Length: 219
Image 1 (cartoon, helix red, strand yellow):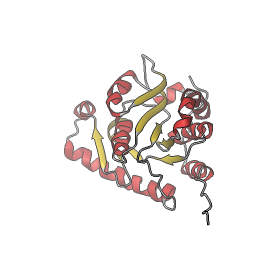
Image 2 (image 1 turned 180 degrees about the horizontal axis):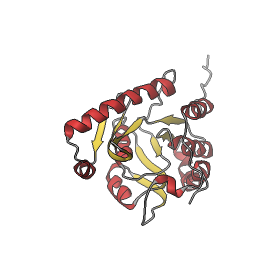
Image 3 (image 1 turned 45 degrees about the vertical axis):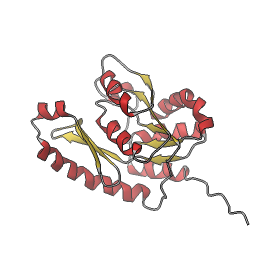
Image 4 (image 1 turned 90 degrees about the horizontal axis):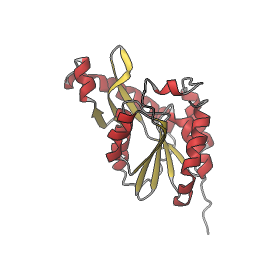
């Protein structure tokens, strides 16, 4: 049980300090992963950026992921066939649900990153951070999209995750750092005493305070 996302981020940072010499880039999954990732970026003196991703929720049960999309236009999509079968959703249904989430993904891209140059990830160690993982669909979409940027190494770092999600995600990350893998997993928020909604304003403010420093040109 974590007090809040700040505490979870500080705990994760202690387990990641050995990577400081690798000059990693910290990528947060918004919105919940942002305050966790910010504490890691501060501890490792590393740049902070976002990996835009959206869960595709089952109608009427939005927290249950039938899939996820990642990338500025939601071009990377993964689905959860077991959830789809349970919910009675076919490929066409999922595509329609994904289109609605792409609208929100584009809105967030414009709001969070419109004037911010992306960090070049090629050849770098990237630490992908969220506040927790339930089904793993969102994290899998993010990992697949991230791999196309040709990083040297991808580390998935989360405070808590389900056993099934960790097992399913291992092939897609070079390393997974997860502080708690409870045998009984109901929801990410159940493992925090204080788990408020992270608002757009907090994401924008956090990114602004972690804007990469521009080195003066030498003449």
